Image (cartoon, rainbow, N blue to C red; front, side, top):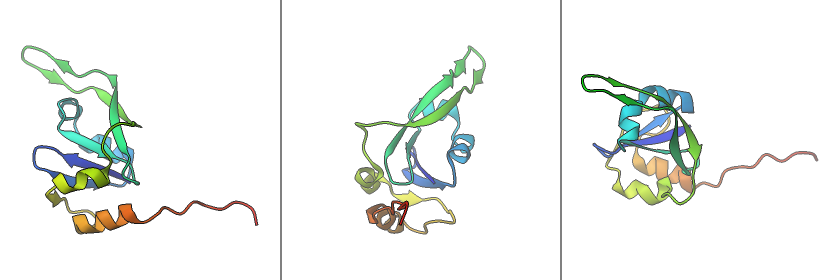
Length: 113
């Protein structure tokens, strides 16, 4: 699960996977700061461009990027107060539900015994 905030409308989107988030969030908008990303636990992710965007005189072409964990950026828990809406999704109906999810400790699988 990937969380992404559209910075122009302060709306949180929830995607099933990184590939779904990347397919939805256009690289031009990502590069321009239009999207902020977090992983399932609310840790910050950053776009690392593999192919740069192209901005010509009359054309714009989207590049390719991947999402990687970064430190030093606010977590979703720290950022959620500045988000005003949540986009419809099958996981969370409210921002409060997202906040509760982030406050719940993740279960670490136990091996052996």
